[in-house]
Image 1 (cartoon, rainbow, N blue to C red):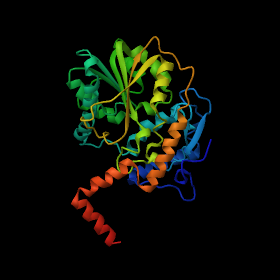
Image 2 (cartoon, one colour):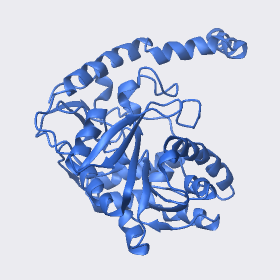
Image 3 (cartoon, rainbow, N blue to C red):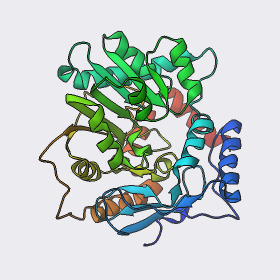
Image 4 (cartoon, rainbow, N blue to C red):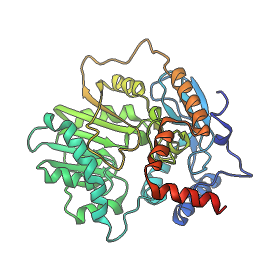
Length: 366
């Protein structure tokens, strides 16, 4: 373990970090904190999914909500993970009762059309990326489907769909709006309900980073895939945060460290997990002209396919040192306001007279 990335990543119980959130979010953050303090939520040591044994550097003692979760970087593969972490029972409680509302993603009555609209874009981007390999009328599965807004679009394109999630209220909205085959729980729930179905595509859109045991999950998926089936993994890419991100997140690693994300993967990290689970992994670049609500955030897209020749890596290159230097450099630039994305945002703001005038007024009214 080494020093924190910078002092702002320290846990200070006397003057805790207070994020800018709604009152409802604040109450749920406090609820998680109380569950930690009371021992209802138990933390347990973790190791990197790549198998490296305690080859870690401590980056942060808090997550983006100020909760006391430590994040460490694996010097072997570059994956950043929370360590120690919640056990499976605690996570089921968190995702069932807290997660969506705490993250400001609750689906309110009468807003499902807008929810579908947000998910439509990433469904269309996924289809544009993999549709040439999907058979007509094939089966598509989304793990962590929420209300199934994306699956509804895929279903309307003529594919058979199924999804699973731990948010029963969100899935109830999906069922009411005609999304087929939504099941509470893990992918096992789909297997129990549809035992004869094999999927041509299983995708995880900003979900793979939530999994407690990604290798076990990938091995499990082999039983659900058709002979030519594939898995598409889309995760946040913390190693491009200097270039992309919403204004508060550009260059700001803390925004990517939070309870729901057990792991923040490097491409090498995903490749090594794939090898352990018997898959080949290929980084892909989707058409950036197809915009989604996530287009301004850095993403890593990786396609996995079962490969009989895939083997766990023997001679592991230590790429984490390079990634640590990237994060240290990005933190320094962020604090100076000189990340590429920060500069781009400032230049973009100058193109808008209204925004410039508001900034001028703010200066002279202080």
